[in-house]
Length: 146
Image: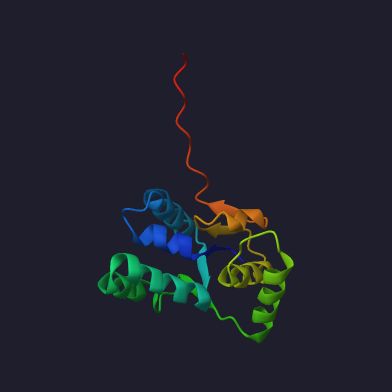
């Protein structure tokens, strides 16, 4: 599948112009769409994102975000059914040394199932489990020589 997974961190970075990753996240999203990729997300991620946008940016911003994603053919929603929920539960309890949220684990389960390798997110947990983050880490400014 020619697709990229979009996590809450990616949605939030694109929605919030004050987010440090805003420009890079929007550019990465636009590049993926221009390359013909589909954006993939889950109902758990949409729940988390809609709530976070409302809390940080207000109900009006949440409404605008909802109208942008609702019904678009460029976005594929994956539902967390009983099977995916069980796979997420197994991941959640398997990685005892990680601070993965349950929503992260549902995302990991879907990404593995769909064989997706890249996630539009600012959440380093995706890298910890082996996925590629888009946009990548911000380039560091070179230190002046002494």
